[in-house]
Length: 347
Image (cartoon, rainbow, N blue to C red):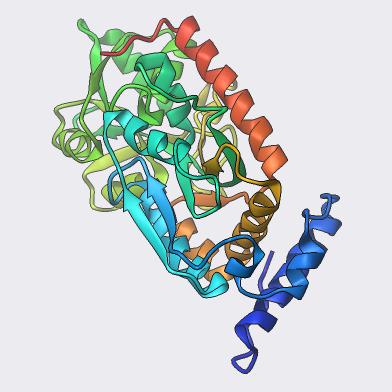
């Protein structure tokens, strides 16, 4: 979707109505049912007059600044503020592998003023840690904002330039090769465990407390390999600090068409990517979920937004709340299957 340029003489309300009409037309063209309450939205103006008060909106993140969810939230927050005319605050509540921030959102008032954007890997929290909330039933999905392909990345002291060469090198070592991740249950961890499972190679997981030290040790050769978000991996590879062997998804990303997939390099069943979901607390009324969904779709349709996210390796999805819910539940089942099949334990 390409968003038409704004007319500087339009009022905010006129611009917003035009945007909602575009969403309706696109949704109709894709065979998507009209968003609930859309007609009433077109007739009214400020968001607080439609069920939200004028108090600030908070996007609470369970991750630290600089992570992919943080980049997403800080890219989208000024655009949300411009569309709705309300203050938007991004709040990082990291800790306990993401449980602190997510529990805070799950226990927040279901009034539309507090939402989160979180990676799909947080669905694994109950598989590794004791938590006091339900990662599925504690939230109402708004949309899947986008997804992100990871890069199978190796240190420069690893003599491999393809996935096949890397796997052969691992098998030739006398001791298990170390790989890193920002912690148990992260995409970086689970993707490598999936690779170990399908390729039948031994590797030892080294969990770090966050990405920064893991990246440093990868670039320094203290760990041999790591799955890294494609945008971050591209930056490290551009400076000659690491080598990218392949992408994690089955098909090449349109954002990185020159990087082959692991599936192309001898493991056709390998298909892994991370997505980022926007969620509100359970109990949030359907009409508020629909308004948030319409807003996300409009903001994510803007060329400027897509360009910024694309440079981070994030491909925009912006689906319906119903499709987001189905994807979340299916992904949880997939993670449970992987953890049990590969006998993954917290290190």
